[in-house]
Length: 113
Image 1 (cartoon, rainbow, N blue to C red):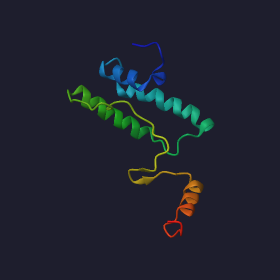
Image 2 (cartoon, helix red, strand yellow; image 1 turned 180 degrees about the horizontal axis):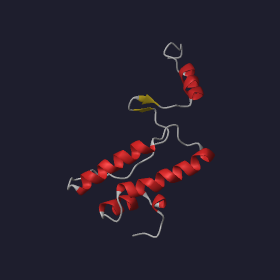
Image 3 (cartoon, rainbow, N blue to C red; image 1 turned 60 degrees about the horizontal axis):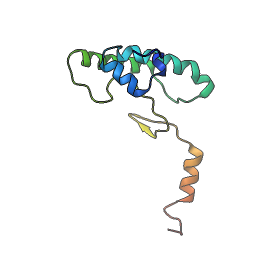
Image 4 (cartoon, rainbow, N blue to C red; image 1 turned 30 degrees about the horizontal axis):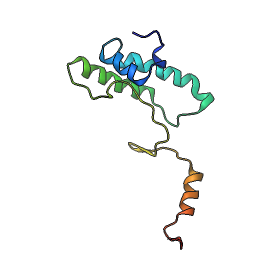
């Protein structure tokens, strides 16, 4: 196992650690969530983060893996996604000023089309 803290692992290192049972998905997710919480006030990178849901998801992944299930290539580690437009049941904030400017610039009724 690496000497790095779990939150500092690359995705490949995390996947290998989980696959080789050096640590669980939950053990990997917890320091990521703690790190995100400790830095978010400063960098404000998240519009929505639900730690309880993340832990629930990685626990399900751990149970599936430990029951003998064959996981997908990215099953296990949580992944933060930035600058997405839509998530299940929720529209994520998107740079409204840019979107409004884009719509104004490229309106379907624009004579230039």
